Length: 154
Image (cartoon, rainbow, N blue to C red; front, side, top):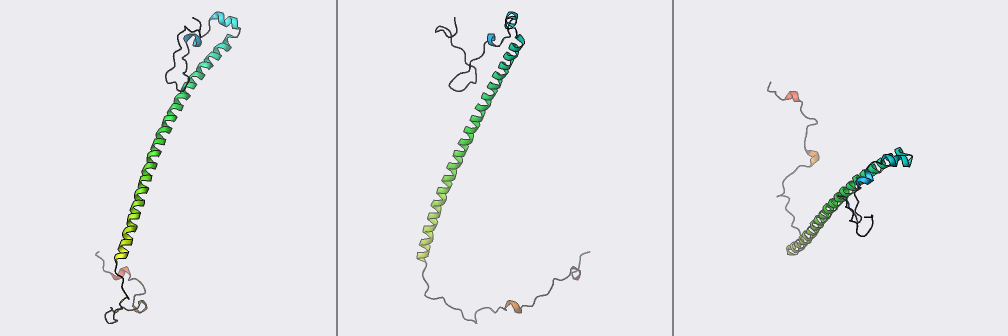
């Protein structure tokens, strides 16, 4: 069967591939080293071998990068989910705080309207007020006592 003919079997997809186009696993003929006849025919067999090895290294690097990209996408998705949960929780807390604030305002207005208004404040008689000396007339020591003036337990 010729490759690409309608009756040829489909090429197997490589594991872990993502995206709309599956990655095709290289066949043994694609990766195997060239035969002696091919080396002699090319005239520059060493360069061909090096090119094939470089191609294999690049394919491995591509697979590693795809794996890394998939891991980063998953981490991003997890972070976005966490962020969405946090935002929803904060919005709920804000809503509750606003409701509580409104309730407290209503209670304050109700309590202010229920307090009886006093016509004029009553002044107390000076005879009933305690006798307090003005601050300037209080005798205080000019400095703290020395430690030597206190008896010690020694």
